Length: 492
Image 1 (spheres, rainbow, N blue to C red):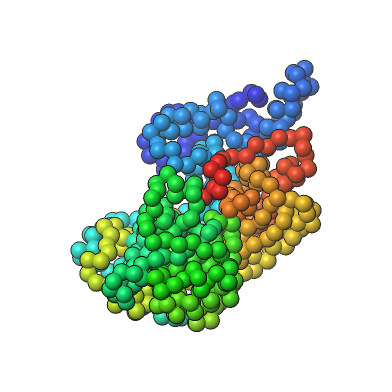
Image 2: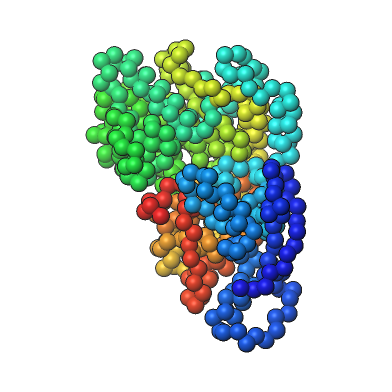
């Protein structure tokens, strides 16, 4: 292991700092400026030192102060995630910094959450002002921001040419809660239309990810996630994504709702065809079922339109639309938009939330939605997609056996690889780029929507170098990092 020099650095805005949190930066961080004398060390040790010195952001080793802090905290945390070694302490724009002051270009945006990047100044200002004014009252009382945000999201959705029947909003705290509301609302519509209760089935699709609470989990047909908590809620059926031939048998008179992501995020950045979504809409009309579009990951400007489905004709629009993630740019909030046919079926006491719609969350969402609904921002997203695609095609040409397919729209893009991409994730991270995986052997790219063309070029240059290491330089082993997606298909 290379020698380590201790550089004390204060990490700003971290609560309950202990002396050990004043972390070190390895001398290997500055290796390019250090003359390395001829060594008589064994060849394998020389190789390890040279390898570490060549990396801009090597993962903190097991004897680092970062590792010491994580070892202290981890025993108290339920192990629902496996995380890589860096400890992130600061964000600004499209970059994150770890506790050892190493900078990372962020192509993950907190899993498509930080659409406006990290540390947005206006968001910070509004958060401070509203926290001093009023944070929470519960839904027993009116507040100005829940209604103002609800009006905004409906009117801007209509003016954008999306969900032309959008009428009312239920505001909650997360994507999973938004989908729970949608499922409950669909069940209530079915019960009113068929008082006997026979119209109660919910249809979803393989490869989907709708959440981890019991209703949304029941709509997420992944055995890895369902089996530990089985049995699931009765009445859920699963179809094949983009298979129009199966729709008639799948959606029947017993179906009260169909939930689908127009672009599957966790499932592999799979894009639904326009004809498939139109066929779903037609069949739902025939049997009286509610059509739900889950745009929690693909909505809010990420495709270059406000909503992913707005490129469809009105005849393919949904009855319910769910959103979250980018809606709060990191602050917890979700929303379920419904049309009047659904809204008139919901009465006082049918559903509720303690924290949902609080004035702090809604004031922030009002500002964030005003930014994300700006057509000028959406236009830049489409331009930036072209840069990504150009580079991806070059990678396909360079590595035709490894890079199999490019998928997605706007800034929700996927690269389908022929093998496990986690070594590329690790190699990119140790060179200063954060990317994540999804589906089966797929790299996912969901950067902040404000990312600049220069930052895209920088990140894709790092990606190419990481692929060079993994695909070409076979003498250098790069191990993958477990737990880099919410819905790993193989249980890693």
